[in-house]
Image 1 (tube, rainbow, N blue to C red):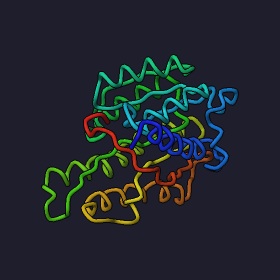
Image 2: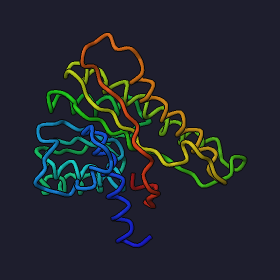
Image 3: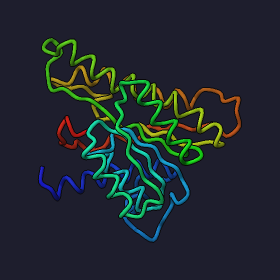
Length: 235
């Protein structure tokens, strides 16, 4: 994929994400680069897996529209670079925390710290994910565990820790990204399909559950973004 086509693909991905977060259609969100529109001014956004790829592009898009952003990832060098970049793009506030979504303690400290810093949470993008290109019978147990711990358990933990803050805030939006493989499998993709299908069922289930608390968080799953090639170690 060329740099130009990669930028176009990233643009399509975060346009859909922003559309859901702003409760508008992805088609309308194609004008997301319009710097005059600051739909997320005053909003607190938390993103997992935002040191590269779609996660970072989404963070940059939120920054251009005035959001305050907290994001996590495993690569600290990339995280610090992204942090500085978000501030230069117009984020009201932006900070990076080194955290792995597979680690409950790290993830909870990241989310609770962001909520305390911002005074609450408005939008949550669950973007961290793991992928392996192998047939099912050649996938090792360690590889399977990494995918399920990241793609399923990580989303569960993130939602578990974010929702209470959103309820106290009076409501919020939860978005989960995944590839098209969450619904249609392919050769060498059976394991990732299994893990992502489970993670993508959580937001609709949360949204469908009767809410005893007024203005509780609403949930939505984004349309699967285009395939983006990034280094596995850069998440």
